[in-house]
Image (cartoon, rainbow, N blue to C red):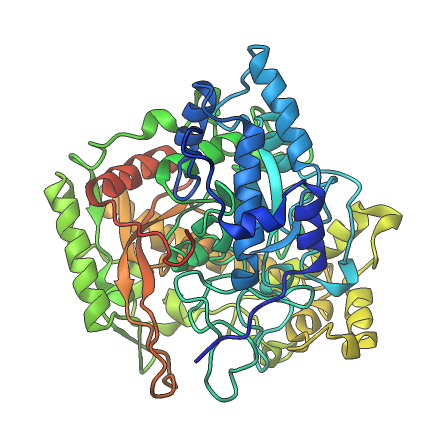
Length: 578
């Protein structure tokens, strides 16, 4: 079955052209004359590789940006990875080349092209959230993390695709598929860039999930060196897992949240997505502020490493003597809660995780198995994390939300309206209510293909009257995810981290506000329910492993993740994108 090609958005292609790419040459695959030096191959190149090539004089930042723009021109139609391209990318690269020539190198990101999820403010490229209402919108101020990256010498080459406003627009009964937004449509996974052929699902969505509401598509296909995603309940970890990337969800507020369109500041966090742990560590250091951000007072929670440099923790022997817990219940094996069975792995994933655990042991880790999380094995449904869901569907409006945590829908009302207010009169809408009304008025233009049930249940919240309910639910979240969750298991077994399959550890870490890292490891079959039609040969899905620690434990987690990565080197680039 052939997939219908995606036509790159006008913003993407005009941006590529404005940046100076000769698209015809890029598409032709022309080779330099045999006497010319071999061009630098950006496919799977690491940030240190790129930096070394520039330091040696083999490569300029301008050439590096050109190579990445050429890849976007060549393959964007297949993947739909970008919302917009920075038309000044080459000018910025030339300025950074001039700085280098004058002896000023800002650091490991000097002259390196990266992308930001399109809910992160940039004042030189639009920030849309994927919403038709915000098409072409340029906010009046930069996100703090954007300013930090640019100060470090990074070039924001593009705004990466996303699920519209971080996937808190449309939930059940009309769940918006991941990586869809009204402005640019669906992103496709480079490991199988075809659309879902199943009846009732053949609306353009990918056959192979792209993961959460951030997009790792362009990083996986080497459109840029790395990207920044945002995570409320798993949207760094899930797309990193789905695109065979390293993803780091940091401790809440380690990276400033100022200038990031929110779902709820109680759980929102920006973090790096990259092809290697090294690149992710470099990105995290550049994103983090040297001092607490006055616009986000919580940024003083974790102390940055000296020089905001995480690379000293890239220790290939980091697993030697580390105590790693295996939380069998739910993550590896099903558990009975409230009369129903939840969790567990199928045979293929279980075999892969058994192999991963053997790697830990071979590298000298002390594996504690099992190391159960108390709130995952408590037989009392009122005290079990897995029976305490989030209120994220249209069926969980006021009056029907007693059995779920309201923070996401409460926080969306509180923090989204505050974010809109920070934009001042330039904002296309002034409140969540106005955005809902705008979408209704522009339904025929495609503003709400999957309706807006999450906006609806959020907008009915009263920030003052519902404050106590939100506080009570947050306290229960903290009890189940921290005191009787991650902290409990780490303390009981004196662990450095717990080790989880795929992206499954993302939810617990996010609700605890704690860090989590996923590392590529293998593939599993893509066998959805209902199944694909006969004759559709689905390609396997990437599958990683996760390390979770307590608050501010990123240095140790990076050490563990790097050691695992170096012991395995399991990342495989997607085929068909050379």
